[in-house]
Image (cartoon, rainbow, N blue to C red; front, side):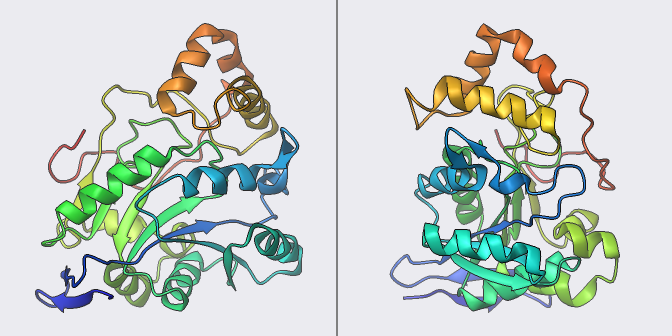
Amino acid sequence: MKSCPVFLDKFLVTYVVWGNFVNVVAVVQARMASTRLPGKVLLKVIDRPMLSIQLERIRQARQIEKIVIATTDNSVDDQIEEFAYIENVAIYRGSENDVLHRFKRAAEQNGADIIVRLTADCPLIDPEIIDYIVSIFKQKSHGCNVVSNAVPRSYPAGLDVECFSRQALEIACAETTSLYDREHVTPYFYRDPNRFNLQSVICYKNLSAERWTLDEWNDYELIRKILEGLYVSNPFFRMKDIVDYLDLHPKLRDLNGRVQETPREIKDCVFGEKEK
């Protein structure tokens, strides 16, 4: 049975759950028209598209009930729809620039109570981190509407997980007019952390210097090396395995050491109680 939303006041929402069922949906935003590396999400490594490997890793997360790919309605993304059909994954197609609205509609169409936001440029996403962040969200469901390991940066770039309530998503979509907020989905939460009871999750060790996300060709080369070095022997490798592998082969970090992360408008600070 599904949860029933209960409004605590005008803004904050928690859940009364019967049968301990809450529909947790991972929404993966993906498109082919990347500025720096077009078609990156379907680039192949170990004979598979990057996005296929990412979906395999998301499926290993025990807290996820369903996965949805949220892509654009541009014809170039027909390839992603075809890919989703092959992978037997739900898909929603919407605005290219208003990604916030795309997320809202994807959540509505798939009955999401809780949304886990993931991006398709993170093929090394760690399912244990996904489960941990969702579990924190559920433990704090008395009023916590957003849990994130993305701000402040302490995990490697490429392991970002943001978990939020459907009601928080709907509030953001209804209220923000900022083009930046609508393109990047979650900044509205960070601008008003008290209202959304935002909770930061901090890595046990500062790994913010690690870059495992896919924005440029040099990122692809590093991710390819990691997958070729780890996946064949252990398809269930985790963050620590990657760190250990790179420590054994430190020159690999030089492959994308000069790639710059896209600047963020959100202040890099800890929100809520410090969770590790």
